[in-house]
Length: 88
Figure (cartoon, rainbow, N blue to C red):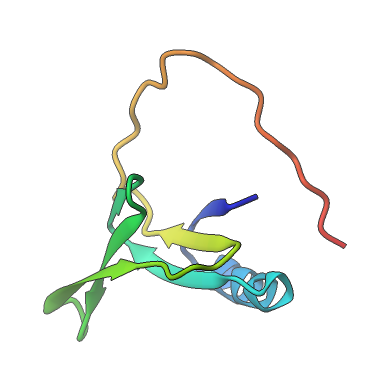
């Protein structure tokens, strides 16, 4: 997969950081805003006193962990089947 989304907590930060190394990808945690075209995220820095806008370089896998209850859930319209990829 090109983009992997998850919820940010102690366990997932550790797990996805290790997964990023195995996938040779990019990892950003504590995301509060997400734009898909182009893929740009905003995250707090300096203990939340400032916000950083971060874009991904040319990496094959982008792993994004969002802070809980920060991203608005929108109706997708059509329902689909997610792609499940086995990582060994």
